[in-house]
Amino acid sequence: MRLTLDAFARPIGAFRATLAATADEVRNYLATRQSSWEGKVARIGAQLGPLASGRIDVERFATLVEDHPEASPAALETLGGALAALGDLAGRSERLCVVELPAGGSLYEAVGGALGEIGRAFSAARLVSDVRAGRGKPGVGRTAAEALPFSRWTRAERRLAPPLVVRVQGADLRAAGLAEFLDGRQRLALVVEGECPPAPLARLITPGIFVLQSADGAGLDRLLAWDGPGIAALVPDSAARFAHDPGRGAAVWDRLAIESLPERVGRRAIGGFSAAQQMEELELLRSLSARPAGGEGRASAPGPAVAAAEATPADPADKLAAWLLSRVDLSDAG
Image (tube, rainbow, N blue to C red; front, top):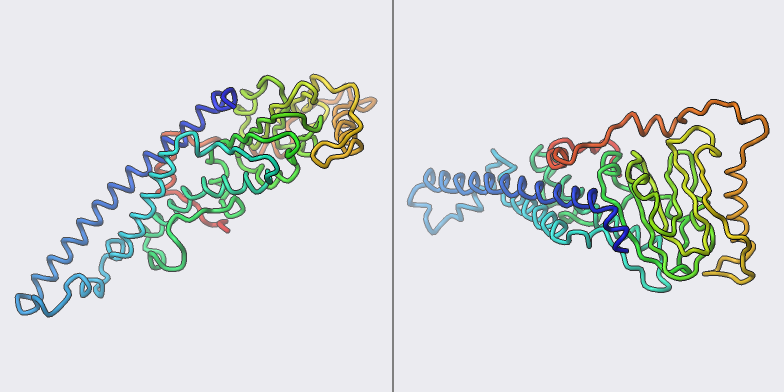
């Protein structure tokens, strides 16, 4: 686990710094709006005069005059909720990006839940954006900074999220269902404990996804360098070791490099995967890596998925806070 967290320290740290910087911006914005509201109440109180004292609730009366809706009590409450969420997430440090799956647990549900919690940062940013733009009525329709499922993240949010590190028992390693989360620039790392099927990630190999099985962490740097989604599993020595790198070419046999395959598969099931299913995944790896006859001379160029990923540069870490607050693209929000 520590090896993987150290490898991912930079992107995890960058996301935490983004949360902290965004929280500072929201805090300053909230202070300005709070000052505006207090000034408005004082101004209206003066306009009502001494006869209103004790007879009229000046603060409540002030809410009826929506000349600055972003400074209303509801807006201030929404901003305060967003600030609290950002501060909470930033305070968790690397723990925000770590999942400890108990034996027998659902890998899919654990990863989905952890990403939803990370999504609270995007939920907070959306609320702040709504308040600043005067969209809707703050505090109405949804809870401030609630968990935001990955399925509702925008394209930009899927490129911004930090990697997730999951400790999982080999018998619970049902990785195929994680394909739903491999989009944008989301990276997942599975630290496998105990015996597991020999090629649990084989079914996730597609043209634009970096897929790595390693026994010692070799290749994690290449996963981080890939400007697209990816998944890695640190597996026991008994499992296959390979890397599928989308940047190496258009043909799958160019992209897939197999370091080693187990000589045989045991006869017993592992975590519900029969020996036949385990063998199927190994055969899938072999077939994908086999270069067809006459294919040696073909030029390899990046495929459409690779070109699309390369066309969209990563956002610099020092601009992410500003992006969260003023450049949130909700055109494809769920």
